[in-house]
Structures are given as structure tokens and as C-alpha cells.
Length: 268
Image (cartoon, rainbow, N blue to C red; front, side, top):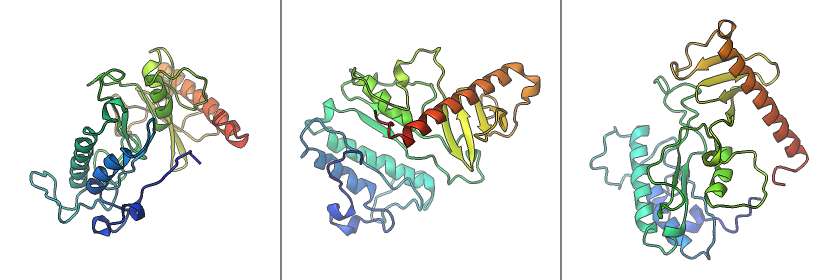
């Protein structure tokens, strides 16, 4: 449905010695496979590699050398160390390919980490966070080392990439080009967890039931990123105004999305 013309999976890889027993082919093995396989595709192309080892049960291959690893066996953190090494394998192979310098790489997640129970990261705001790294080997369209602290969600990825590529034709997107927005433009991330909407700005997280005009709770994440102490907006007019604006934004966004979905206009 997305227009992909081929899929490479465990069956395509055809060597179960590298099968992790749960999700598919271990990341380090798939890394080199993906980088080499892309060289057989005629440019221009768009490809997506779904890594799997940063997901429970967090398996690292028994034959994999873990010299220098800092985290204990079986831990999520050790699996992330392994994923980091696997990405290094991918880029070591990719940088020798003719398409490398002319490719934009995007590293992100399909969801945040929900396996940090009992830690300071076990909050709806922190465990919903994901990385968004955009890497341009040429350095011509994405500046090396630049950090942008605008609020961004997965739905903004497409528009942001098109902006970097200089695409100037009309298109429909529920997201925004984050890197080319003015600082005055309002933009929030919205996600739904446990049947509650979370509307996120650089300062506030607003919990909303999706029905009324009053927030369920408002948090100032600049001083309370664990979301333990809701702000009493009855005594803070500035916070109340910001929360009201965020709920209005969420209502408009959800109305637009819903109408486009039922009328098949999400892409046109």
C-alpha cells in the first residue's frame, strides 16, 4: 500500500544461523545485507530497514563478541550497545557504496522504550520519546552536529525530509517541516496512551480525554519531567491559556485527520 516494490525478510535472507528465534535476523547480520542489497537497486530509491534487537526480549547473539560492553548480560542496555555496534557495521559497509554520499539517512523509532519499569524514565512523557537523527554524509543539506529542540513526532518526518531535499511541489501531510518553521509557529506532538491524549509542547504536557474543554492534568516538564506534580491552572492563568490553546490545536488536528481518513484524502 505504501508503494514498496520489494521486501527483504528472514526468508529472503535465507540463513537461519542468524535468526534471533523471535523477530527475525540479528541486526549485525542484516546490517551488511541491507547495505549490499541496496547497491542492486536503481537510484533514486527510498528504503526502510526495521531493526529488531532494541526490542524485548533484548537478545544479543551468543557468538557475538561483547568485549568492552558496559551493561550486564540480558539487560536492555546491553542490547542497545549491540544495536549501536550493528549500526556501525551498516555504515562501514554503506560508506563504500556508490550511493552513500548522495543518500539521506534517518534513524528513528516506531515507539519509545516501555521496558524501564521502576526507573525515573518510566513516565508517559519519557517512555514515549524516540530518537530522530538525520544524517547527510555530504553535509550539504543537513548540518553536522546541529541539535534542534523543536517538538517533533513521527508524523513530521516526511515533510521535514521533503524540506531538506528542496521538494517544491504541492503535497498533503499531517505533519510539518520542523526545520523550516518559524520560531513563532505553534506546533505540538500528540499521542494517545491508556485512552488519554497527551499534547506535548517544549514546556507543557497536557492530558486530555478527547471530549471536553478542560484538561485532565497539566504538567510543566521543564521542572517536572516525571509528571508527578500537576500544575493547578486555576491559580496560573498563563498555564491555563497555554493548555487551552493546546487542546484547541488537538481538536482541529484530530478533526482534520478524521475527515481526511473517512473521505480518503490523507494523501491528496
